[in-house]
Amino acid sequence: MPELPEVETVRRGLEKLIVGGQITQVHLLYPKLINGDSQAFITGVTNASFTAIDRRGKYLLLRLSNGHTIVSHLRMEGQYSVESIETRPYKHTEIIFELLDQRRVFYNDTRRFGRMTLTNTHFEINDVPSLAKLGPEPTEKDLALDYMVDIFSRSKKPVKSFLLDQNQIAGIGNIYADEVLWQSKIHPETPTKTLTVRELSLLRENIIAEMKRAIAHHGTTVHSFSNVFGEVGQFQNELQAYGRVGQPCLRCGTTMVKIKVGQRGTTFCPACQMTHDRRIDEINRTN
DNA sequence: ACATTTGTTCTTCT
DNA sequence: TAGAAGAACAAATG
Image (tube, chains in turn red, yellow, green):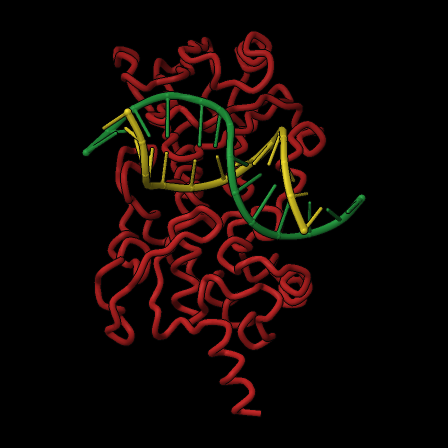
């Protein structure tokens, strides 16, 4: 399930392997991969070279020498691999870019949920609305506390759902949402606007640190994630909340529980991630 | 056979 | 009428 750290891991691999490579031929094996006109996609990328690989939230932006950008979203199980010329397509290979140096870049996707869009690099913001609407990157530089306080004050949604909203903050998915809420001792159903500045500051620090740490571990491999080199991530060994239902909380020993929040599986500690009511009591007591 | 998985978009309701 | 909640959707797996 590629979230920001996994997509960043893929980006770094692609940057290392394919920048400078020229596309000589494209084999589109699953036309629905392409948003829009798939023939235009093929002609729009053929003969171009990869000049850079960027990322915005969970989107990969493959820059081409001809002024186009491939906007690629991996969704649940999308994956790139770089292969030699004789490698046959896998069962779930959806597109193959043949490079001048005889290598082939595969995009594989067992769930077939991932999508690619070809856009003019200069107009990508206009052409791809979901890119335009993305919130800031969860970094020290881009995610200001003032902004957090502002947007969180505007919503009554459960904080878990709010963190998953890419238009508020880009890049957080189900795994890291559960992790940062556990770290911040915040109950996932807490109404967003009831969080205090102190709590938001802590949450912000945890989000920023967690993204950095997960990238350093090359992402989390839960089901299928692997980087361009076919290597799995290491961060699954660091998870403290996600997937630990029925196991003791690493902080207080209470059995972790799993509920649905906004139709998403959510694992948390019912003891040390305080409910809204208990927080209010606490705040009243300390005042 | 059907629930489960996820991010995004569409639809419905308040 | 904005905003939130819920459903639909993509497809495969166990």
